Length: 116
Image 1: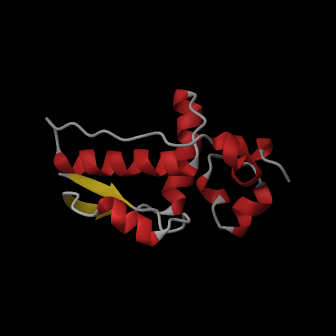
Image 2 (image 1 turned 135 degrees about the horizontal axis):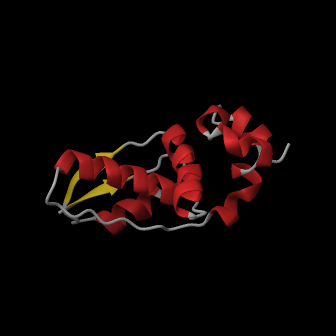
């Protein structure tokens, strides 16, 4: 069994998603905020040198939360499914991040590197 992570802001064809999961042993779903995802994008860049997209960052935050709730002795696996290069016009845009109220969730050291 496993946990399914659904990002409601992504454009997923719900019918295909349900069809894909039909019969899958799902224990739980995890909700991760955009603020935590965007913070993880920049944390992974700074701490690990990984330039991942928001979906990958969301997967890591969710995997962390699941691992924390399971406690020691469990294995949690996730997938880094996208790179930030696909979203540079948004992730590195000060205007877009401000509009979405996400700028404050990015480490201050990156603010000067963002596009105006």
